[in-house]
Image (cartoon, rainbow over all chains, first blue to last red; front, side):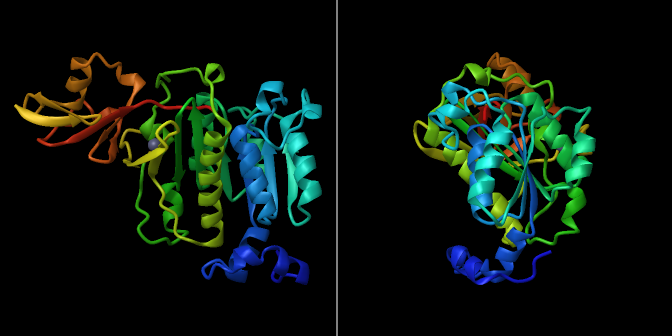
Length: 261
Length: 67
Ligand SMILES: [Zn+2]
């Protein structure tokens, strides 16, 4: 546990600490933070870059996927020479070289209902970033957040429709006193597991900056949480990447939800 | 009849119509959408009981899962 900053860190993180409600205390919280990023594609590679560069102390990157040529226009961390290499490993190597204050771990596995308990018991993160690219994994991550009492920062985009939200399990509301945070619905309350998606995302197009916007929102929400700022949990934000417009709606709890109730 | 706004368009619908009835009327598969009523997402399990009021603002949208 770090309790003070060295001279180099004071200069390196000065712009973050100049924010009055971040200050040295918030920077120390970032340096002592331990988070999991599930999916190191368009969303995850940017979330990981922001978290590492901000000084988040421990970052676990989880992805079994390999870099592909068609990833390069939006996954700016990767180069043509990375094609066919595991995304978690490539990202961890690059981020580790650039960011000395972070310990970046690569887990080149596909998260499943069979392996998540062992993994999360081993890495014990304090927050999860859902940067995955499919509905089944999103349902699983939501379940993990509820079971392991972890705040969840989730973003998704297909074509021109982006969605992001922050979720705090009910079990954490009393442990982390935050004004205005009432019990709210989980991902499954909004989208039950038998939901039909309008599109298969792997077949959908997307523009790089649109992915970057969603990743930036989830990274920012997560950093606000870590430094102790108020975060609006239980609100689903939707982004229209054609009109560049936002809308939001409260995630009401489903009394019959089989995940969070 | 009451006036309800669905994805920004006004419609005249029977008083006390439920969300489930509106979806059926519009031939929308329930599993394919989330429903927002006045800026709150109403869980699917409540749609058959949730009665709409005059001037309600409804929105339907689907999950996206790409990343
Ligand atoms: Zn739930």
